[in-house]
Image (cartoon, rainbow over all chains, first blue to last red; front, side):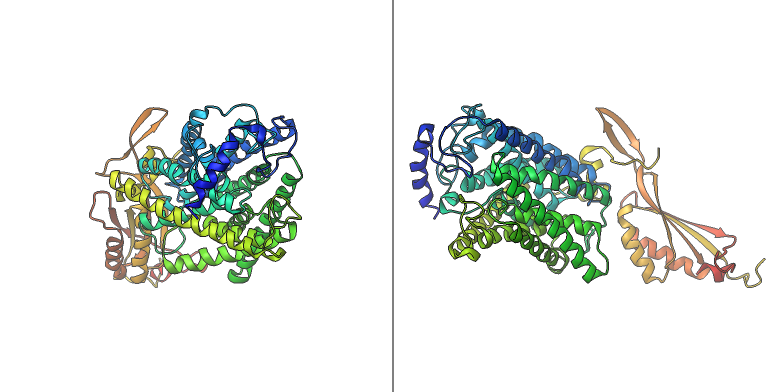
Length: 445
Length: 123
């Protein structure tokens, strides 16, 4: 499969240079009248980009920040915030070109370095009705949040300098190629027919697998005894979860790349799956532990959002409910039993929620996708096309394997050069004081 | 005062200042020594160990106080040594900053619920 990619890519990259020969490859691309900017579509994609920005900071930052001990909360906010700075620059300088410019099946070209040629008119192969830069900045916010998701795995113990180097390398060597495979012109998973509406594979499986690799390689936090460490501020976590839910409308409904019916459909499935998953998690806890918890609902709704991401524009509302219910069942078993049994310290469950939820979502897309919902998609197993499930399974396995191997190599390299783990003394003192010389809270005054 | 209180059974108040990350191990050791009643406070301070430097908008503040945990444990005299050794066992890393244990005479102790006094009220 990997060898077939480049050959197909060359066929596609040729017409890409001449927009006149436009084909309706993009999810939403009405064939006639090329290069006409639609104001509604443009407004929605710009708004969605801002929504997705909000997911990283303060959404994810506070979701994760509330879960750590109070001596480390700034380190989480800092790591999330600096991702916006660093990956934004990486993206406009070379990340967008590596991900989306016409290249081979594995990686994009260098044609769009520094956004050279990425202008204010549409690039119809990706989105025919919005300026090319609108598509670029929307995708850029995805590139920012993906490495930020991994923070949850190595929270409270990674050296800040090593984190920065790791994240830049990971964005370049893992995110950019995988984004190209799935969404880029000539990308080989895209050509294979894998469905990933808004990034279940590219964002969540990719980051989730990187998270388990990072958790295993960095080792447990000092004193971690396979028991959850009490979160220092659950209201922060609930605030973050709410912002993530809000931002996810941009993430999923924005992925329609237009203000249209598909966007509304994705909006509704996203909201429905989040609701079903949040409620399911509460009910599981009620039955299993006697009381439902706020952290449970916050975790569940995020798991629901993760799971619906690849499916949002391809499934109907009833499958969305099912996807939400099942993701909470699977993720609950993962974080409550499997994690404590195996004893790895995926501190904030980046793998348990994003990795596992993402895998379920990608496979569920292969089960429940329907052409009746989205003619540009495909039918899934329950709609008479088992082949789609096999394609989804392949895409999951290949992405997971690639992320696993390359994340491992990057961490080995960064560890050899700088050391990835904060010293024991710094970890005990807390990363806020040791890495940033700041404290989040005062005791006196 | 209380007729139940005997002269030979004196009460002591043990105050210990320890590193925050040692609280869990100290608690475990105390439970092993069957000392179950403790009061825990978050405090600031430093002894021979220097405080930390913090920076806010480029301005350095040196010698800021470090977070510590203070334990208060009231015990009858026969529990003093087991309590001290449990705290040391749980809190000692061998580095500067491990903290200190203070032992004070305790004049009396009253259980609010029953009005009991002295060594019967303490446990």
